[in-house]
Length: 435
Image 1 (tube, rainbow, N blue to C red):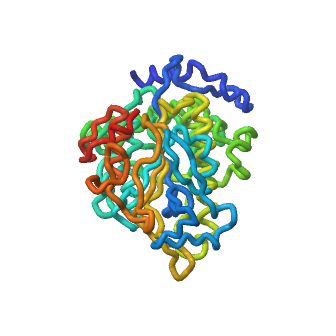
Image 2 (cartoon, rainbow, N blue to C red; image 1 turned 180 degrees about the vertical axis):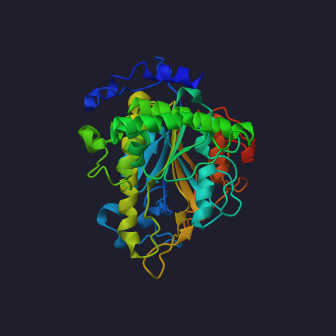
Image 3 (tube, rainbow, N blue to C red; image 1 turned 135 degrees about the vertical axis):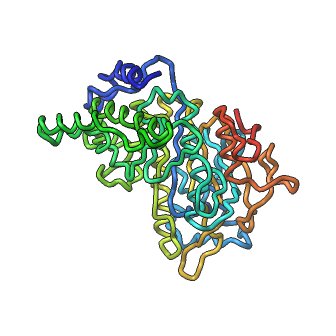
């Protein structure tokens, strides 16, 4: 499908869905065919390394694990006691920072004891961007968001792949799925706002003419792919500006959205609610199918901020995830056509250091909602030490004859579930966990 044809299909239904929010000329979704639901991919990054003992991989305070200092008496009362959750036919102890996600446990897969093989922030970030072992701090291969965008009919979308606050890599796929980068969630308004709104008509017309007549510096002297990418980008920007979607990302115009995502100030780009709401609007408008974003930050709590900031920041981030999931499930109740991955670059130590905080730890946990997975808990960490343990890759249970799970197992599984080639991951997918 050509970009011009795509634009016509996108514009077919523009006056409708956001009318309830007082933005009557914007419609959801902009892709036009009834029942043609694309697969949506969302990757949500918690920056700084989360403490899995507070949420994803807790311990019963009464168990007195020999190699773990739970620090329970240091924590606010609301974050001291984990509770058992039943989901996918299993029961697992879950920490209170994850309480906002309770209603979505039926579509949740929790990977525990994931070996990040690093405690360096840049290396861990590169790892969970591509889900391939990096070369030092340099990512290898394509971002998972790029792979997932390539698995859709991406010509139907003006922004097939969007990244917010994180880099995006594309080495293997069409230039059309190269990630559009937003430094902050609030940059979406500037990206989609026509310049003519702030300029006089004559100046705006001159700029538009210059833009249409401009030649790319990679046109004649380079191979075809760069020039193709430039042309695609130029046409898409022109189409976006012509649609005047900027106000759709002015959340102050949508009281219901502000309330739903708990947004007190829509100008605060670091608010997880603002980030999650931006992701929802990008997906809901049909502009994209793949978004990778930094959702929460401030988790590198080496000092006594661990007892105050770490649990609160985790819970705020998970609350934003929960609201986004609720919105995604309005059109895809069982997330059959949606994958949401929630992760940090690694975990935090089982012991508390001399400054009252926790340092970096390699035994991580990772959440997936939907993704074509069966749900439940896969893997485990050592109960008394939060160490790594071998896991049977068929059952997901600890086994001396198994192997330690790594991020590439998860990446290969999610890619395989979408019908993508997985040779680059160099591991077999966890096929028993694909529904």
